[in-house]
Length: 196
Image (cartoon, rainbow, N blue to C red; front, side, top):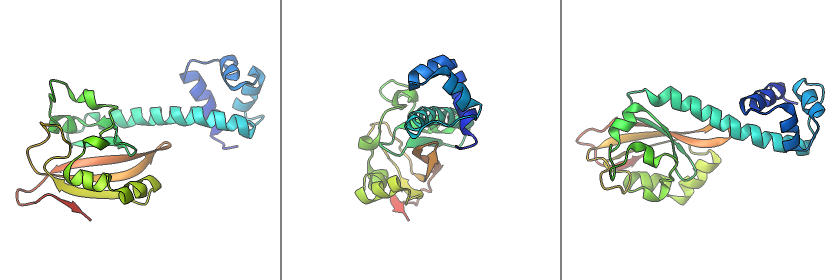
């Protein structure tokens, strides 16, 4: 059993407001069994381990994502974190909020949090992400970085009216593959393009 398991299980249980009896009921075991797992006396069966791993992975992702949100929220550098599957916006910096159109159809930036943007992409960003081979390689972890120069990345009417560079890094956050993107002003002479 992973040495960290007992600590994570107890931490997850406490942070989710469950006592040992409630967790035991959720997993179909006794309270004594939970206590023995948390004290490293016994280890869960493979079947119980799969259930527990599912609970911990989901919690770990939410916990790690909250840390990312806190960490980048006050940055002035335009930066955003997207779920690699469907490009759902997960977190963004203050600089990204200023770069993004502030009132798309009268709504603040929060309106796209949790929305899948894959079908809204255009131009160079669409060339990178909507390409089937690139999508497969991103999913497998074979593509770890991508860049482009563009002046519009979504089909939203009020998307940017200036040239900018996007540099994306594909990485894991808990059990989820994400794309961490930094935006930088482009040079006026830069023409839109996908960069190798």
